[in-house]
Amino acid sequence: MDQTLCRSILIYWPSEQTVGKTVNLTHEAATPPGLIVTGIVKSESVEGRKLTFSSIAADGVDKISEGTRERFITSAPKFNRKMNARGLNGASQLSVILLK
Image (cartoon, rainbow, N blue to C red; front, side, top):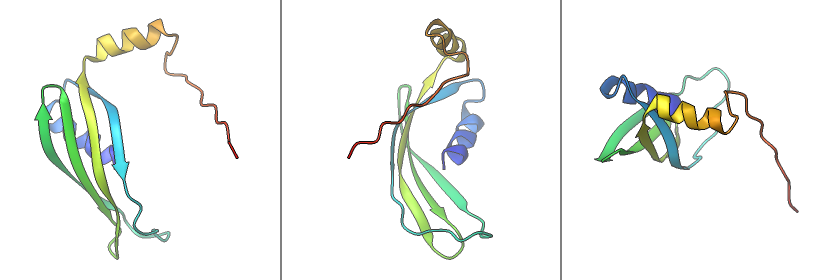
């Protein structure tokens, strides 16, 4: 879903970069192997740099997901400078702690 969204943003803001803010998606049905998933993204609002979208994913049999997503337009050079200053040059790690 996010890939479809990011590709659609590039149509209107080809020289900009966006960063994700919120994701609110449902999981409606599982998709068996071999089916093609289609994502549909609709721009709901543009408020300054904040972009809000709705989305639906379907596999040809069922709707498998729907929800909303917010992204913010950001300057790629400025964003990359901040990440480099934090020592994040494209290689990050994820730590997971499982709580009972």
